[in-house]
View 1 (spheres, rainbow, N blue to C red):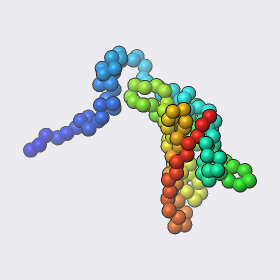
View 2: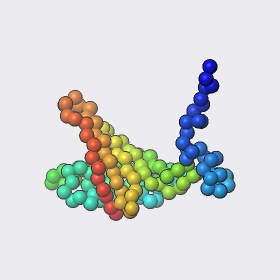
View 3: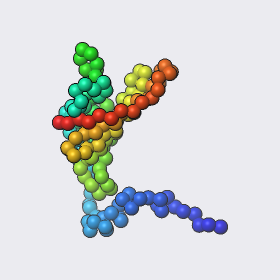
View 4: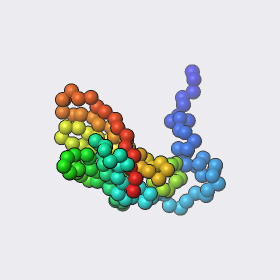
Length: 148
């Protein structure tokens, strides 16, 4: 009978804290690693001024996480999506600066998941829209590039 594989064997090396510390020559910290939201904090504006999607995102720190206040393209003024909590992510298990986030907006007719990451000073935000109102509309994906 073949041996049973443990979940540990399926982890990528970058997910194993001890392996990453040894590889990088870093001694074990006395405190847990806390991801620093600062690189994401601020007001981000869509580079495409003709977008029909996300036009602005304001990101603020909230304890060890963030809040997002997003605005969509509406006429005559932008649609205020409101403020939601977001989750921040670093590049690996020992990194501290935040490089990405996720957040979910729930509207009466759809749910929108935002996934953002920093790239060369810009904030790339992907939106995944899932309609919940049984309207027959197709769920859709979009990508926006924002800058400070």
